Image (tube, rainbow, N blue to C red):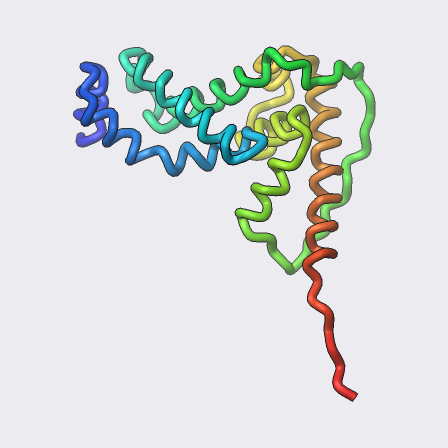
Length: 183
């Protein structure tokens, strides 16, 4: 009930309600923005632009699905819009790229390290990886969203996984602690 009232107040451009809504969801949506941004500053820009769109379009939320899901979609679209005008995708015609074998390692990476490694991926790989692996979109949906072919989406996902695996292995190698044996 509290959320419905907050949404209603935001529809009336109530600044206090908008601030409450922002405080309630900014952290969670910022993590989403970080997935798509190349760095922390870009993520902040996406979050800012996304909330502006949320407040401008809040009257269009009809209660179908969750409000958080609706906001998430706006944030993802805001992030993607940033890259649509750039030529970050290489058009690929059904090229087979072998998927890397992911080893089940007992050493887990922290979420922050994993986010940093994903952010280091080239834009075209990062966007497709996030949309497919983390947000559950199909290659057909990704192709439509990014104005690329399904083959390009599949190829960029495979290459993202290869690059990410290399980055994880490199990170683990750099962070190995030497074992000293006393004589």
